[in-house]
Structure formats: C-alpha cells, structure tokens
Image 1 (tube, rainbow, N blue to C red):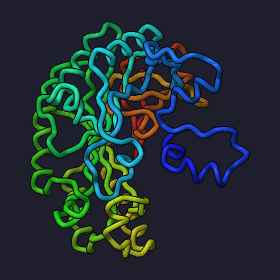
Image 2 (cartoon, helix red, strand yellow):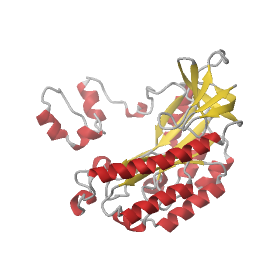
Image 3 (tube, rainbow, N blue to C red):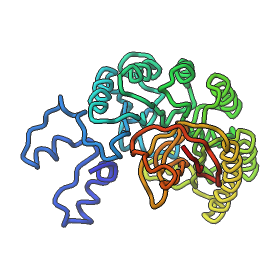
Length: 350
C-alpha cells in the first residue's frame, strides 16, 4: 500500500503475482473490506502512533498543485486537498490524550493549506488552533513552499512559544534559468528577499532547505551561483540530491537529461562539503548555551535528545551522558548546557 502501488499497480501485479493484493495510497475501503471489517470514517484520525509516543507526524493536507517540472508527487497524489481545520484539531486532541507532546506538521506543501476549502491560506490560523490545545508543547513545520509564502505565519512563529523557531522550506536552486526550467515560479531575488524577511521576523529561526543539482539546464555558472548562495545564506540545515528523471514529469517529457551522472555527483559532493563546514560552525556557536531538549531514546552510554531546532531522523541530536544524568526520562523536557559540538551533533549536561 502506498505511492508505489498507487502509480504502478498493473505493473506490480504483473511482475510480482505472488502478492495477494496491492492497494493504492488512498484505498482504505479496499484493505478494510478485504480484512472483513466495516470502515468507520469518523474514527480515521484515531491512529496508532508508530513513532516514540511523545511525538507524532500530523498531516494536514494531501496532494500538490504546484507542478514543478521534475516532481512526480502530483501525478501520484492528485490535486491539493486540505483537511478541515476542526478535524485536524480533533486529531491533535486525541493524540495529546495518548501522550503526544510534539507535533511535526506535514504535507506535500504546507503553505497552500486552506485555499481549496476556505478560499484563502489558513496555515497561520491552523497553527494557532493547534497551539491552543492543552498538552501541546512543540509544533514544527515541514515542507513549506517559497512562492506565495503566507507571511502572516511569521508573527505566529515569533510570538507563540509552542511553535518551534524552525521551518523546512525547500528552495531547490537560486539561479533564475534553473528556477524557470524547474517551474518554481519564483526568482532568485525574490528567494533572497523571503529568506531575509523570515530571519528578520523570527529571530533565531533555524531554516532547513533542500537543493537539487544536475537539473537539465544547470550550467557550471548556475551551479557556482548555487554554491555562492549557500555560503551567503548559511542555512542551519541543508540536504541535497542529484536530479533523477521521473516518469511522466514535465522534465522527462520536455528536457534531455544531459548532465552526466559523475558530474551530478561531483556537484553534490562539493555542495555538501560546503554545508558541512557551515553546519560545524553553527553548532560550535551553541557551545556554552543553555537549551531546552526533549529526550527521544537511550543509545549505549547516552541519552539522545533534540532542541526545538531539530526534527526527528533528519537533524542533529543532543547527547547527554547517562552516568551524569541517570534520572532522565524518555519523552520529558530538560534544560541542558551545551559543552561541545562536532560537525552535526551537540554534547550537553543537565
């Protein structure tokens, strides 16, 4: 069940006939029927959390209307569909009742939220409504889109202590010719203005972004512009990947994937070496500071925690010696002092 079988159902059935059934991404009726049970739609948000019990991912919408040239998500998921605000808040209340304290708010594209239901962007209102639920401690926002960014979200991030000063906003590139070929509907100058505005409005915010190298049309000059941009912006968190042609996308149908794979990989490595130095410097600046962390787990001789600037699985972690802090409990918050740092992770004491 999921994206793969949603898109390649007939191919999978032919290639792997020993599988009893394949289900698409949204085929809840099919799988529940085959299990011999009725589907109770009023209970759909009553989930079993598969993360550690103190945090959960909260999907507020499905689909995407952006149609970036390289992306297959709209082909798989279809048009953008926002969940009603009240339904999302009901799910938050339910999850808080199960012990969840931290919410990673996600969608294929957060910033479009509400347009299809209410005729306007309502992400800021949704975040405020989630924060108003007793028991919610942290809210972290993932997968914003830079074009037509909802600026009314920034005061909420600045003024509400439950909203982490963290934003995952995929920028992909900075060179105008590449952005144009990617169908991003934003210029490099507009991107710079947006990043400057976010940092001004939300002091201390940590930005996570994603960059792509090797998209058709990326010249050496365009790649150099991307490197200069990353050096200039000093993103606290940055991931990158090399362009890969996806079936049915605009890029696959209209562009030639003419940048050799070894060139893509060399560009990717060069970009990430620059980011590693930036990350190391930013982490080193935190030594000596007192920060609030939530404890996720124990690994060997260390408790593993995260600050408001760290999302699970993708961001740096904070390591605290078990021998120096035997009373620590998983899922609780603690004030810690950062005592050292490496390229990505921090070390701390209570």
